[in-house]
Image (cartoon, rainbow, N blue to C red; front, side):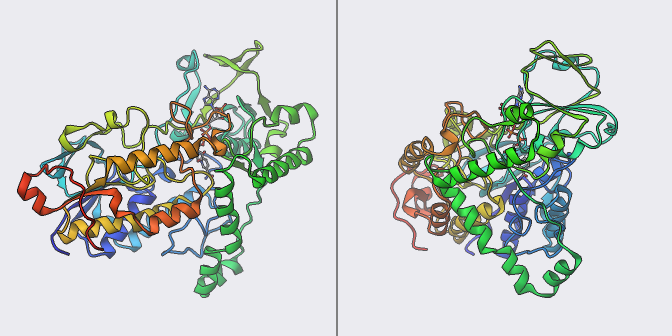
Length: 506
Ligand code: NAP
């Protein structure tokens, strides 16, 4: 290393823990991870609703370097994932690098460094900022008339109040995404009456969440090769990678196959023809994120459960009034209404070179070259940032590949050969034009409403195959980056002109 650089990581979720471990393993000690909450875990800390489960297989939803023989199920329950992240942070000795209850409110690139301020008044200065702030954490509160007038308990699915009783209660759940479906599946046998408010029927893919036996777990513990083989199960990887090719092509045969499987599952599982038609999805499978559940169709047929597909008109003190005039009386109303996904990094006040505000750079839509770097925001690198791959795929693998990419730039900056790195505006513009053109042909652009869409209806997810993503992350195009050298800073002051620099040899 040429100089002792300081790195600030924002967020101690899955990606922030990864960054801390990788920095530490690479010999960096002058870094800190600021976290607004009081412990690690990100989305798995914030979500604690009944039935919380990851629909990516547990052995794939695992850091590549830290396989876990003890996963209880094929699909891991949320609390187990939270415990896994806490355990990994502890095992890899990165806990001393976390600063909890420190919400960053300001990040400004001034005089060649990032100046950081937290809500509590802590100030810091860093050469590099890694944004590991996550995607799904700003609750989307629906603007339903009268919502504030509800006299019972009411909370968003990511703000679960565990003091509120559930057994025997009249519970309403709004939302039929993965979250709403998991909550309804968990509560159908417990609620006195469960009303599931559906605006749009979902494609539901049958899934069996098999428990690993004690013998299997013992074998995983005793045979590291076996554990590795399960972690890198070629069968699962093939389906998952092929799925990423299917979703970027609206005419994919694989999507037709998924639709056939979803239809067959609906026919086989739901007896009442009226309920079956209410549940029948209209658009293409995968347009909204696929819901995977082997329990939901059974749960909604429970004698105490009811699917309400009449539009919600308003919320009244005693319940939800639907457009057919019916008042659904409730003790508890759960808003499983998703997240605001346009809030990457915000509400932080972030300004780049020459005071350019992130809000202005992203006035149209949040984006970043290769989902990593924003022009004029030097040495700011994102993990799981805007335009990164999402959608039924393991975000841990995404973050690990992004880290391998970002590490090249961290090493260059630490070597002292380069002081500032950010995507060239031209490279970013070409990336955006290609991305938007490709995005329109993805399944997410096939006509439904979802959180994948930006304010202009353009899908914001990585619109090419996962293989393409893996290849881009493995071989960074250094010529797409504006890299400034110490000589430039010396010649022109800290804000050297953005000349087209020869790429420093790796
Ligand atoms: P979501 O997929 O965005 O679904 C939100 C639901 O709320 C939709 O059904 C939506 O209806 C409904 N909704 C929103 N506003 C409404 C309103 N005003 N009136 C009536 N309905 C309204 O949110 P989510 O279920 O929380 O899932 C978000 C993401 O979290 C998922 O896509 C997934 O990436 C992740 N997740 C993953 C897992 C997992 O197992 N890995 C589990 C849970 C969540 P419309 O469809 O009509 O818009």
